[in-house]
Length: 312
Image (cartoon, rainbow, N blue to C red; front, top):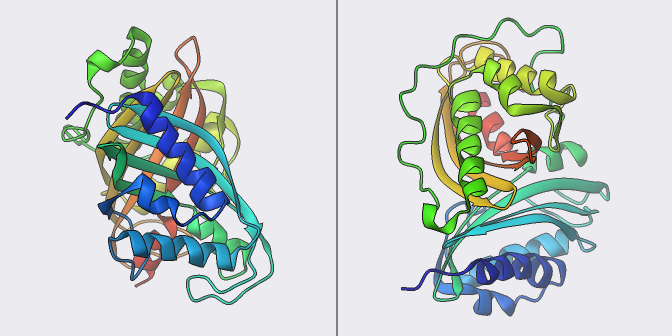
């Protein structure tokens, strides 16, 4: 089949945010999504069907009737596309079994889609559900050790190739600059986060890098990012990541990954180590400046799921 062009994929990314989520036009599900669409990260109890997708949107909009998603950006290349956004609204109805708190909420998310025959056939998405729960008072999370208590980071994990099975953009679809940005994106997730190489953070990030989705208690700039790297490695010495996808367009690059490990070290999210294993999904978006330094980072992880798994 012919490969979708960037305009088609970008249009679908924008329309699912504007028409479906912001305007609540459930009929657009039948237009934008294939009949056999697969949602790889459904909410509990959700089946893979257009009807189930409509119900999820209806449930969110009923619980947050003034829901507005601000689309922060899109990335499209080949059959894959990524959007990243921030949702705001008032929690006025039950959601995830939690009764209305009438509190203002603000959380972000990243979506990835695969397009075929003009429709979305696969969907991956991660949202900051933990931040939502914290904001409505259902939980209160401190991510890792207090600033200043981070011990020296363990040596990088000896992972041979965390991106070995990752799906990459067709190089023929990329400009020379985009190919270089892809190499930076790969080093960012595979070297810093999958292997735990803190030195790479100072090589890849601009000194004034902005983490748009910081962890609770995270300091600004590179020191704060290294803090989080240290918190994770101290809490989960066997932490490992598998990179699944890369998408690049212009000065933006995105990745999708799976993280696994055993909580045997320092407390994490206020939870003492109980030796529980976990597996979570996450996505990242980076912006690369003209000097090929990373200036901005957006990232979303299934931290609510992580906390449930390490508390089990």
